[in-house]
Image (cartoon, rainbow, N blue to C red; front, side):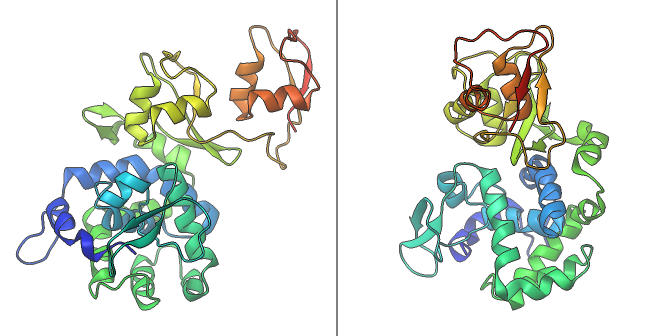
Length: 304
């Protein structure tokens, strides 16, 4: 994990007092506001307390400001260890160590969950209650996630200072975030609620949004964001448009109850592809249609 080389940065970000107690910091709060819905979603899928995910993210990434996070979108300091994806090399316990690199923050959060859930050394943690953040923090340290002797204490302090334990009792992240959406602010602007469907994350565009403005909020290259949505990077988005934050799938989910979409007035193939998080070319291919086909109201389109 990327830890010891972050010490100076972390002390600045967390504004540590001489008593070694953490003080509330707006940078940390913004990071929590930005990723709490993602942490809740990961908790529902992997049974990892959202408070733990957020506390580790804040601590390991320096609230998103560490070099590893900025260069490689690695929010949890996870080293390569058999990783076959993109990598980044930085000094840590030794010089020029290999760390996992991701296209965006969401991939990092997903890989962190998978790393814990599939790692034999962390298996006992999943016997703990989802609300036992102290047990999780101490278990992570005991299992060797970090070399810092105060690692568990720091996670617990972060959870208590920012009241991260409240996220561990969320029944559903969409409803939970809607209830507190007005409190989620960055640079004076409320954050877009993030939703999940078809193994992807998405948000709804607001009036005046562009790929550049959304990219700045979520920490993804605006060029990649436009590419994920099969659009020109300089497009101005319409209010209410779906904006996907990762590359879209080739078809709808296996367990999705609607296997057909009946075309309604005003809909286009692109609109339908965006609605279900399917690549436009794949939607044409699924339905054996040429790209120049003009869909008609009432057409039944296969989604998988």
